[in-house]
Image (tube, rainbow, N blue to C red; front, top):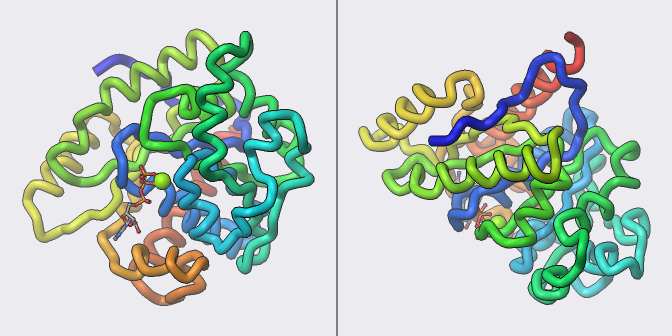
Length: 269
Ligand SMILES: Nc1ncnc2c1ncn2[C@@H]1O[C@H](COP(=O)(O)OP(=O)(O)OP(=O)(O)O)[C@@H](O)[C@H]1O
Ligand SMILES: [Mg+2]
């Protein structure tokens, strides 16, 4: 695996976090939504940016997907502050994404600064929120590249299964490429295990292997498989509102505390 610069303790942290993994269905959107909601629940202001043409993040918080969203900001039609929507969770706002981003992927290809469009789009919102979370699509294409160039920090959700590590090398190479070519500030903030099933030996083996390689970059909090996490999106509310006491809610609340601790450890040194 290639060497990736991980977050340095003396770095003053920026607040844009991208959730990336080109592997589909690993929990990027579930984590952006519910970690965001749990941070909002303890008093932080969080902006979710749906940067996936599937629009799952927007649906997960019940946003109106008909109106303008991130695409209109990329195209220069709107400012980001004009397209922010509030959600049912106080402190949690969202900028929608959706099918028009498929077009953006193609349109950006011929632009000279094509890697920097999202960075430019979110820059004016940086001072307005404690956290800005960008959910990226399951590919290493131009949208994910934009999402990494826009970010100060990257969180990689990993499913605890055999194929989870497949593609990780390629993702890390991509992060390295962004660090050297486009965004020196990008840090690998953490690796998060999702959909964990403690009963399987394989899940434990995957966890041990990744911890062996990444050490403290792996979040102590592990998100277990929990049916409530998969049900909540169809109700358009985060899991902490759907079932405040389920194990999925408690896990993302724990993760929110861990994220705050890491941020505090970084910014106070
Ligand atoms: N811990 C969990 N327990 C049970 N189901 C989960 C869990 N995390 C995510 N899911 C479900 O697994 C599916 C994939 O999760 P999610 O959409 O968050 O992944 P993703 O990485 O964003 O996918 P994509 O790559 O397609 O954008 C969804 O149906 C989601 O509800
Ligand atoms: Mg997703």
